[in-house]
Length: 448
Image (cartoon, rainbow, N blue to C red; front, side, top):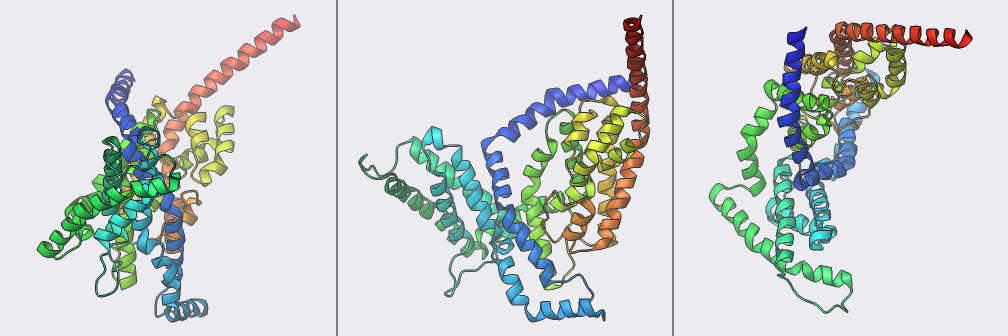
């Protein structure tokens, strides 16, 4: 027992002294925060667009004879263009929303220090992104790079444009107007020099890449990032992300927020590729997306604590039983702060192993099920608060085999947590017995 305690202390000191400070600095870095907040701001468009995609491609076999399914398939085929138009204007051009949202949120960090206008930052980034990602060709703007393919470009363009505006402001480079000029006019004139600089820097680069490599900047960037995107979709990468996120959570830092912020660009890129494959009738290539993390790995919240809550409901400890009753409904909607801090799990050596092990086992099992085509793969963005079985089925285009798998994974998590739960329950029962005996003794003394 002493060796286990020493090992825990060693791991905790490593997380506390090395991992936590680095993670804290990264999570509070303004560019990381702007990228994270930008993705969050664009999420409503992606959720609605993904929801409509399911209507266009119903989850039924083309040869089905079931009346309801047949009618849905025929309707989807007949009105495919009309159904997909809202999708094309949301998910289909999601990189536009992401680029503007990131620039706006990064611009807010420079409002006080450099007097930047976040709205003008967003406008400049929009122009720059369209300049390099959708140059007019034969009288039309191509949209191929405005979806998942353009995400990395959107991030780089947004950061470049805002930092360019900050640099010009810091060095007083711009058109000076009298103080009597209205603020909105001054802001618009402040954008003249940044627009000119963007055109003189990004546009020649775009023309060079088109002439030398016959591709647009987003396609060139995707070819550079392609090995990284493929690696991020592998099981070792998934397990590493789960491990880091839960080590941070155990140390009291919201690891899920940090990890999801860093992986969002990969998740949405993978989602865009899956949706393109679905539209073409090709096999879906990617597994690791936000819905996979939310509904298959961390069922009930970080640590896959739905299984632990199930154990708590039948606990002999009054404390754990009350925590279970308080946590069961929030856990059903993937909110587990009551069980995380009510147990507590944070900094509790008893739950260190299962808190890391349960989500990692879930990841292996769910990844294997998708790899073996026992269930489908993610094609939709789903609100993370959707109940796990429903959210999983929704994310996979209403594949209800996913809901069955989620229930099985919750049971597996409960089995993993159970022996550690019994150890902790025993400790609490002893404490509760001592407190009850102490209270009884005090009552006897007062009665005497």
